[in-house]
Length: 208
Image (cartoon, rainbow, N blue to C red; front, side, top):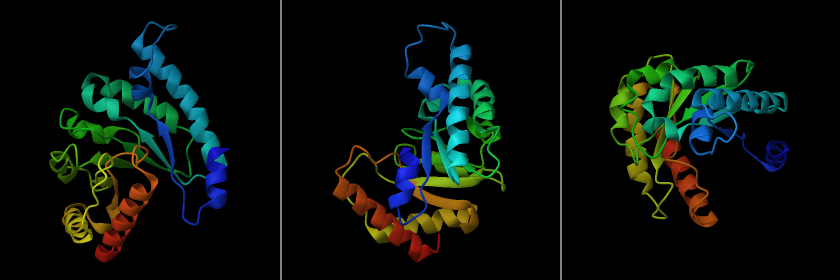
């Protein structure tokens, strides 16, 4: 219902965002399963239904946020199984795995085996993610978080454009999208909007 309302008042395409099963589990208290794997897979089955319903009402892009995975590389295989459940019935949706608040170097290139079409990286908290982006398969989309989502300082448009141009040179314009480093919910609305406007302006300068 929230997604449908957002679409009804939006003038641009709306991206749906749902929590990842590993992150959901690691930020929760399990008083039922007493088993991490069972808990994660149970959450994945619930999220799969939510994702399917989002597809049914017209969502074309769904971002699955998994920041906790960066600090839990031992969960990578479990994440693959859980995300496979979440995305299994999505036939018309572009899926993005969102990681933020750090770098993904402990996951390595095995991260790109997860069953999603695009990977989001926080280049503010995790500048070392740039090296992993260089190693991404040619079939993989990259969402680069280049605007600080936890600081009200407004980035200069020319600096953002230079960063976007560098990234486009690495992965190609067709595979690249840009974003804030994480959600903007902790910023004042006017600052969040200004950051997005600057990001949009910089993107247009580069043609991304």
